[in-house]
Image 1 (cartoon, rainbow, N blue to C red):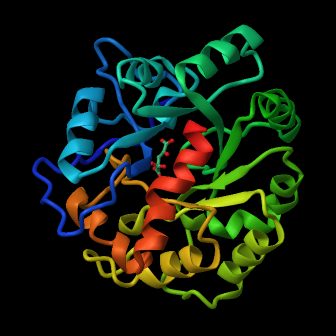
Image 2 (cartoon, rainbow, N blue to C red):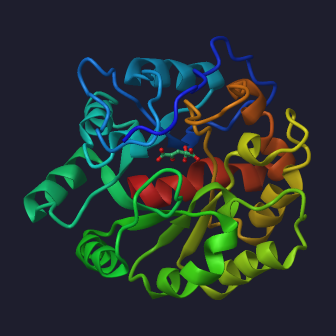
Length: 291
Ligand code: 0GY
């Protein structure tokens, strides 16, 4: 059943970023939605987005000075990955994908996804977005995608980490954490909850993290300076295991659609040197998605 509406469309007219990303920069977390007339939304979705088709995504990529996209399957399309695959097919090798699958997926389908440019699956634990999937089902999916060289993207809310941590640590491949692990900005970087996540990153070299979505965590709004210490800590501690992305078209933002140009301008604040920027935007995503 569709539970949530009132979805805000993406920013109609983002500003040109002041920061110029290095050549070959990758937006490693974004989505395509629909168009609904061709790729209907899943009946079990929890929200209905506005159409955010591949043409708009590719135009935004160019406008922002970026070169490539990693398109992550979002819950509103559930296990119907066709819109994402169609975008990969027409990207001229400039997009890779992360799929959402159930264990009914066949090996032939996984191989076809791989040929199209899928390099990972997403396990979503955010209760407002998806229904619960039993742990053993996820374990069986993980065991099947690991031999393909794929990774697993995990999306969870930070208060749930203690309950999920041992499962994450048992996964047999690279694990990529969405949105900095969704820390509480009010509690601060040194809060035990956030420090627990940082320790997990320290202890597990197969864990990567996306320094994305300041607009979801900020208490003060743009230019998101209250979120900068979280991103910067992760980039400086784990320079070769961080990814950056826009999260366009920003599903489920309730108040305000972020200006994507301002999101690009956060990059030099969280990655203050050219070497950190190149690792974050080029070398790391190329290693994970284009190697
Ligand atoms: C995101 C964030 C969200 C939505 C989804 O799968 C999704 O529907 O990921 C969210 O609402 O927090 O990762 O873009």
